[in-house]
Length: 349
Image (cartoon, rainbow, N blue to C red; front, side):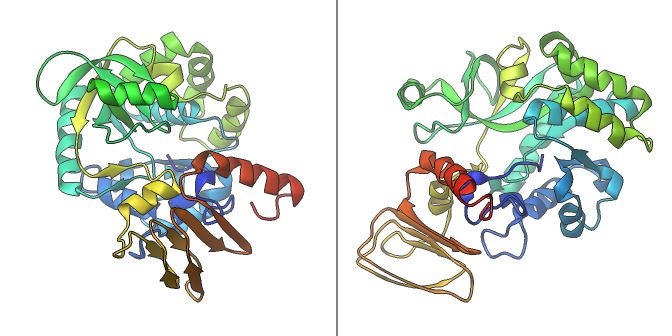
């Protein structure tokens, strides 16, 4: 899945080049490329599909030259993750009725890739022989309000039945989840057979199922894009979490620990990046920091940034926008973007 805007990383992430297409860590590989590299040892390249917005087609093909144009599934509208996943699985199912499917977002960071490969291999083995919707669950380290949570059932081992599935609780609820020890973060990575998830769509999101079922005679033809353009206009804007996972009775979780972050906020980037002795992070640019602690400074490579006397701040500059705010004020980021869009007619989006 590679169609998100990544507005919480504004001004670094923009509409014309969202965060999945950026090299955050100076490795020479973008988040999308790192995701592709990670799954390539597990899945043949011809079996990998990228679902994204139509405007990102050329960027995807440029960053992933091994991918053929027909492997890039183009959404005409943003309708959240349920229609995105439905499009891919209905098309895959048309090709292979017994397909075993891995769904991964393109903007996550994973540091222990060998453990990731082990767990994905085990997970695919489980879903191949069980009518199960499997999510990868991460032990929480803080009361995060930006993640979904799964409550695990009783039993031992890494794989458990899910008792409840809750998307993005408020801070009070997230704190209760953390303290209970029963709740894990939902990573947004899923495994299932195509026939299993299609049954779930038919039962729980029938309006979405009806639209993509109509595509049987269009998938893998020249008329596919025209069909999709019409189908998406009739789809609700709904996540796979709300639409399927919270309601389904056959949800399982694989408890995983492979150094995961969804890299959703500047604070998460600060947490994952190399820091100096005062816990400051500097990305891309040169910086001179005086009396500063726990800040993150991001600017274009040819910029020198001098900061004195700040603590817990984000200083981010890119393409005509300079943002200075409290590092943990993540909820205000969308407000900044929305108000800038309204005041300047989208110039800085």
